[in-house]
Image 1 (cartoon, protein in one colour):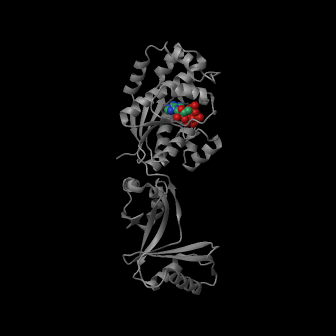
Image 2 (cartoon, helix red, strand yellow):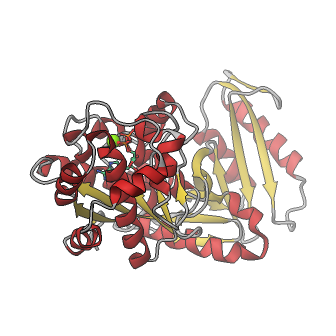
Image 3 (cartoon, helix red, strand yellow):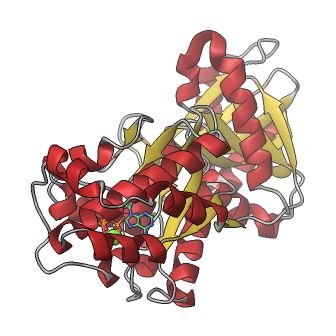
Length: 387
Ligand code: ATP
Ligand code: MG
């Protein structure tokens, strides 16, 4: 008899012939996620079993697994040899001693003659004999005792089915470059895309000395929080001050943010192409600020060819905040350090910029290519998980 953890696979069921591909990525992600914890990982059809861990690590393992995309549910379970007398005792032992319950038996081992329902009834009767405070109801119950009798003479017993993170295994949908500010939205945008299987790289624009070490560290810490869900993130810290000086000198103040955004997109796309990313990701939400109107988005979008994913485009701020709290980025995001955009923020940013006009004005920035290349040359690369 030993403690194990059953892991059920999620949506990848749907993927037909590609299933093997998705499963292999999920397995890899699980072993990376559990690195450093002593345990063995056994792969079965449709599920994964974690064994041979110290009981004191059980919670840590389930916590970690609950952040791995592609997992449907998780059950800490007791594994025992298939012996009905023993199983009855264990069921009584691991269950609450009062309340309404049902027993569900799955019998993969057909050499056992008794039907699942009869075994369930037998276990239920035994449990009732052990506590006067228990009652059975198959339809309305406080807890369910699951007994999974496998072909190999082993049985798993559990009462909990913890929700997994859902989504698709990170990496199975390709790689994306997240524009990661220190704000609330972009970490959530990264989380949303990782959930759909996108491996993340990230770029952060840093305006030293206007934005300091603390602001930079905050972004590194945010990326680390995301890493709990999506594994290592290669984070590029790109210097942005010279670009901001050039824009301030050559372009009308109201367009400051518009031009900054266009530069951000251009640099992000170049970095994306260098690192094998096939899309850019931003935390924009329609109408949230002047730079996120349809017109502004059109003007910033038009400088890049890669698709730009904006998973939060239809979300309200409070919906985004709920997710930020759930993934534990919120408290970091609201730390009051300057962002490169707030430092150079104009009083009245243009709300509906015109693309033709913007392109015309941008011609004044004759050193644009140099500025972009210089920023990329001076990028600092940080890995959120050390190997
Ligand atoms: P966030 O909360 O993500 O900062 P926001 O509501 O503050 O978003 P903006 O500041 O207009 O909105 O930024 C829009 C998007 O542009 C961000 O979600 C992010 O993807 C990108 N962005 C903004 N500033 C930076 C930066 N300094 N570095 C990298 N990306 C940035
Ligand atoms: Mg911001």
